[in-house]
Amino acid sequence: AAKRAGKGRYEVFDPTMSTAVLARADVENGLRQALDRDELVVHLQPLVDVTARAATRVEALVRWPRPSGLALPADFLPVAERSGLVRTLGQQVLRAACRGLAPWLAADPGRSVAVNVSPVQLREPDFATTVLGILARTGVGPRQLLLEVTETLFLEAGPRVVGQLAELRAAGIRVAIDDFGTGYSSLGRLQDLPVDGVKVDRTFVQQMGAGPGDAAILTAMVTLAHDLGLEVTAEGVETRDQATRLLELGVDHLQGHHLARPVPLDALDDAVAAAGAAVRAAAGCPGRSG
Ligand code: C2E
Ligand code: MG
Ligand code: MG
Ligand code: MG
Picture 1 (spheres, rainbow, N blue to C red):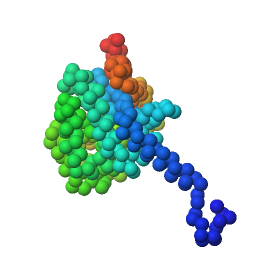
Picture 2: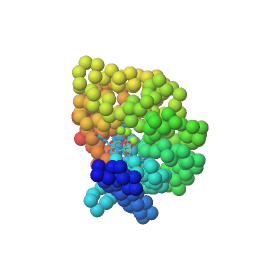
Picture 3: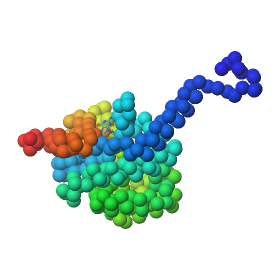
Picture 4: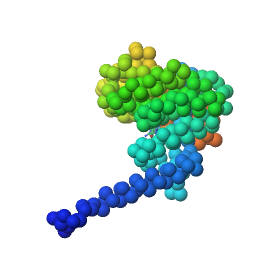
């Protein structure tokens, strides 16, 4: 490229950039086709309710089956958001999760499903209507749906976003802030946000065990959230020690590989049972875990 420097009639050509652009176009086209054919799948990860000592909630996580294997959101979600395809993706995930989980949810009104929502979706004026329509068609009650949004949503939240959330919450749907603590707004604004709970980011869980004061921020988050009447979930729980300490801190839900990994629907019952057993063991009552 240096050889061409100074020759104004050539456009600057950076081979690395070109590859990135091509790859992005590839992903976008492939994803559009996958959405047209309804090929995306949803995996489910159990969340343990600490009081019930059982997994009563599951989070829906999108996967894209490709010839090379199952692609994870990190591989295609940024493209989906930039291209707007995340709107269709989000609808398909919500519909698939509700359809697939309808019998599991119907068996116990205390069960719920958590679905991730992109800020791009919430900016759509008919988002709330779409969500309520999917619930009506799949027979899932609004009180059994929880939407996970990110903190950054509220940095730019205009009246449209706030209005959508208000409409959904008025219908009984709950809203939680995902990856809480990593964004910009954090503790100070928590009081003003129209949400029902926070999911403390896994980085705070991973800090535990690092030495004195390792759980200070986590403790403050749990106390503040509870004082504000919000439910607290800890994500990324990877060891039994972490689970035990989080139980001591009074966290309401635990989620992470130590409890159960995300699984396809047909493996959900086993994952739910394993997660329940893991939380009972972490609580020091292994006798009930069998
Ligand atoms: P998230 O909502 O914070 O979901 C949790 C992520 O952490 C998932 O990654 C899950 O597989 C992973 N995870 C669970 N337990 C552990 C653990 O113990 N340790 C570690 N290291 N990781 C754990 P995944 O499935 O790759 O999803 C990544 C992100 O993509 C999600 O983060 C969420 O923000 C987004 N996402 C996933 N599905 C959807 C979707 O349907 N729509 C939208 N808009 N976003 C989605
Ligand atoms: Mg989430
Ligand atoms: Mg999360
Ligand atoms: Mg996270």
